[in-house]
Image (cartoon, rainbow, N blue to C red):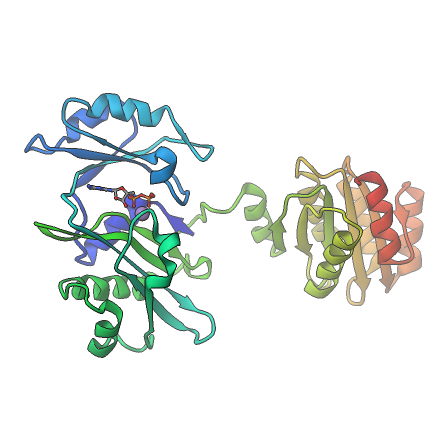
Length: 357
Ligand code: GDP
Ligand code: MN
């Protein structure tokens, strides 16, 4: 689950990483109460979960006189289609240099990888060639000095303790990604001017996070029933049992130039009730006009599946391909209720294509 900048900065600060003084506001007028005592310059930052926020107009500069008006302007904006409901107002740093640092899980070595670049900031993507990378054993509490030297190259040594603290955040918060871009030097010292933290979804309970905000209501419903469920952007709903059979169904839809709306694996031994929830869940996606149910009856019984489909009673057309245990009973039940059951998954997908080309 992705944390917003102000949440990540709160955590960074608890770990001793210096962050600018700031406050979260939910209305423009609140800016007035959070101006620096010195009357100095501020930065207003939309708390929206999008990349390239600054370039998209989500970061504005102001001073004591213009802060409320500038906040009003920011609250009225949409950043890449997302309305601004929360703004972080911070003292503006006198930036001398912007660096880039991130820690993520390196898939090939299955260990944390620390990336560092001398030229951080909003143009980081185009500076990819200048990025240095070291792999650190997760058994170590700190990045060993020889690796830190390799990482920093000629960059100032004062960055090292901050990067080590970020490494500790990464480990203790079960992060998938901990990123500071830019990590800046100022006459007052080093600061994390921006902050990004993604917590591993499998570690939310351990981290005391009760609700995964990144999931849609449907994805949460799927999690509750234990379905493997992924939303895509097509029109053909898919329900299968087993990841392989479900993926093959998606492949076949792709082969016939159709667009699948989702991946849903009901798992083994699904009973009537589970099938009903699965069908209702997929049918509730607004773009779905047809659902392909592709199941192999082993411990899953085809008559149970048929009863589940009938009990769901949804508006989109349901096309079924089932084979195996109690196939004849399933076929009869479906037939009595006017559902189509086809001999092969190929035929089922082609039939679905006629409904949702
Ligand atoms: P992002 O676009 O979502 O990554 O937003 P950032 O928080 O990284 O801000 C974008 C850019 O705004 C940074 O790369 C900085 O150049 C600039 N910026 C952000 N905060 C400050 C600040 O306190 N002082 C100054 N001078 N520039 C800032
Ligand atoms: Mn940034």
